[in-house]
Image 1: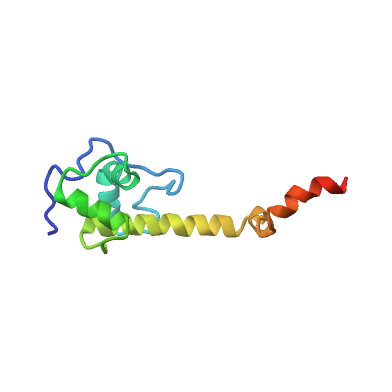
Image 2: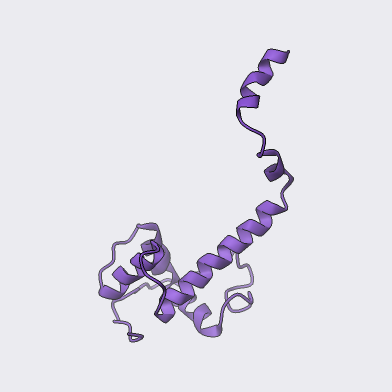
Length: 120
């Protein structure tokens, strides 16, 4: 199953996520070399499949989409690399939002904001 059809995840563009991994996937410490290579070479296709922008054309791509939707557990190297990428993104977002002072203020209910105008 680790042999991927050549048509699967085909893309001519390299994938970079400079916002979350400014030093690249290889140097981020989040991925193995193989995972970093998969993300760079197939990441554009994986992201499009994950977001529903691209429709799956092969059995591997269909299985990948099912994995993204949580219907299947990641089994192939490609699925595992993308799952690791998504977890790394979630970790980074949690880190940044947890340290934000604005997040602490959002715990008050929004109904209070509607009544604030009456106090003037």
